[in-house]
Image (cartoon, rainbow, N blue to C red; front, top):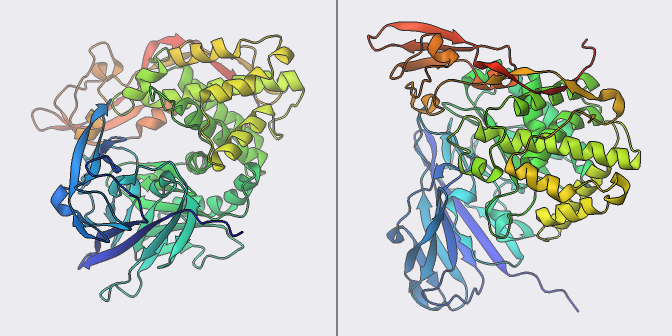
Length: 558
């Protein structure tokens, strides 16, 4: 008997063009026989999420029809969860047969003052458009797998050099994939005068990178690294036979990445040309790990398990380039030291994980807690499990890798895997670790108890941590200063105040505050305009006089 195909969800996109290039997308969403009940939630749509406001659609913007004719779409607001705001979309009557929703979505208007958030919003970029369905597409409320079909229309006025790319396929399509609604939401679309490496996708390069306009020279090396990295990463996670795509978008302000299904987005600005190779390699590896390794949301949604998704991405960004033979051991040790220094010198080291998630986009230091604490936690777990099994060496897989790979396998199979499952894996090592209290230790980690690496090592005892106290990080002003470009929240006891910085001054330019985070000897430099209109340079070391207990690996640097 033939296996029945999962029901269809079809997405049909039509780009619009003006004299500056791709300018909007017309969206047609097809749901095969959803049997939706009148006035009951059928779809969910983000109004504000991951620090990004939605596209501002109204009920009148959306046309809905089924086999019996037009329907009205009705919005119902949903209680906010923290700063996340969403709404349900309902329909005015029961549906009959296939349901089609149609509307046009316009790119988000941004300036250099636009707050940083996840790279999900639809944006214009040098003649093209790029964005994620997470921003512009309602999520059909279904837990089932579906046949996802994506197709582009090619308008008559489309420039000859227009290309059409989705995370799971290039060209007008149709492209099909079996997956959940989340599979579709967590992807990326790109249309316009796209350039790529390799120029023509081929089997020799299962990973392809895409961008608009000229690419910065150092990002070109990142493109080549990603093409080499992906096959090794896929083999590590036992997920061969797939393709992968890396998308670059140019921004007026911001440098960073966001991971998606089978892809990730790198956002860059002109000053990204000054980023080191070390920084670019870490970012590329970190974001690619996100496409493989994740835990599901907790059932009560109090926290999103970012300690795992960000922690394992940070951990692997340090060790996998060495394990894969793409960088030397010094890269792994240096990278690990930078991450542990960031963890121990944070003034929010004892902040609860749940509070850090709430303050992620608003607090200098809360943003990095899931990354740096998660990394330190996983370093310790890796050490404990290696000691228990005798599997030593950064260059080799450990029991931690076995657990992570199995979690990925289960997630690919559609299973919900949460922190309780993580703890069940660790419970299996209780006897061989002399009864290490994995569950109590995990809870303490979430609550902000400092992780002790005094007897830990990275991979093997020859690369042990030793105490090295370092001054505590303190920028001395509000993070919002670098969003509004107006200085606020200068603390009188800080190095910023001592250097002459004052509230209300305009920031004209600034060095990377991440450089000062990662290197305790790097000063923060700003060009500002004071209250009298005079321009001046402010330079200071954003550190407190007090030192934090810190652990680093001693090694001979070349």
